[in-house]
Length: 44
Length: 134
Image (cartoon, rainbow over all chains, first blue to last red; front, side):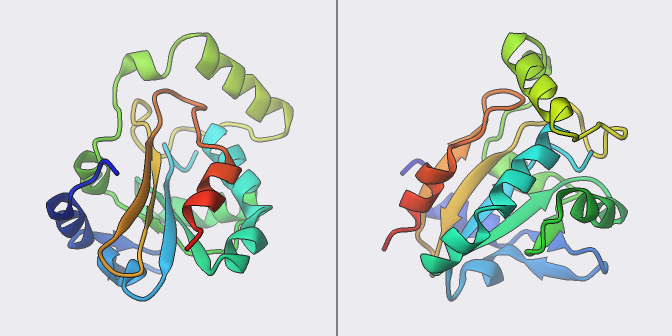
């Protein structure tokens, strides 16, 4: 696995925004379940 | 259009991820006003977010630069996306940024990380499903 715990912690503190403009801290997404985070190039 | 095609393909497999108790989450970049048109184009119904700062992409070390978007393979991927109806409607995010996939949780446990080397480079769905096995 090529992501260390410090990096994961830092990633978890980042905020993302949904289509309604609400922000969410990334770590909330994986707190209780396994998530497949697909980071896309762009929305176009 | 490559990203739209990628997410539409994943959308077809949402049930397979659910059977493994995993949730698909798509994260893009650029303003949130582009999320709805993207959702309509891909018919993706799951969680969809944007990171306008691109900080998450930087933290995960996702590739950026001209060599990741020129060349035969990105051209092939572009043609494939176009031929299945995913037309580029302007770039909604930095065009030279690549993405990837991270499988993580529950809790602070990362199980899989894939960094796309160039446009059109995505991990096979089977590999992602395998990463969801407990």
